[in-house]
Length: 116
Length: 114
Image 1: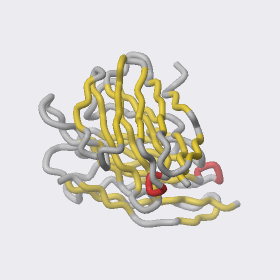
Image 2: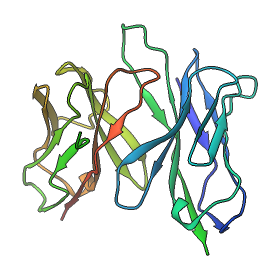
Image 3: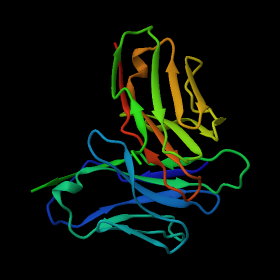
Image 4: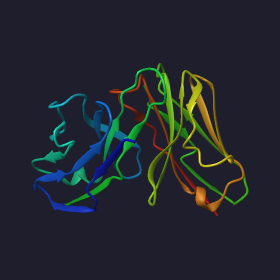
């Protein structure tokens, strides 16, 4: 079945440091890929997404490129801020033909702490 | 729109008691999802609905768990009887469609069963 593997945390960075959180996936079809972020005490919210190979999703300075050849969707940010401290989840959505069950598969999450 | 609304935000109950969690999805969204989040198991999909009809409940841990969606604007997740291992944060999410569409999550209900 589909699966998502992301780097284990926690990750601690100083403000303005470069961030990379690795994410690789296994899927049988052509999934859509997502990064969700969860701030303390809140639900998950979509950070960015990409729906086909070579697409780049971007939002709030974060970027991720859908790499089909390496089955990866790594999250990057050039300069992190204290306000970026949160848990980041990589996820994939399998193709949905209208028949069968739909599934959004999440990675285990990576906790990021940014210190001033 | 107010987003996905969940109540209560926190619930503390004793083992054996019935617990009911509530969710109001975003108006117009056809899909509603219930998730459970724990440190050990991460985020797990319990059940989801399409147009108020349960489509996949294979993630429901056991018969003590049940979920209903009597109309497009309301869903409940019930645990009866509750056990300490049910302690977790329960999220409700809704989406317009599935596939490439975003899921919008509620703030969650933190359940503690003593």
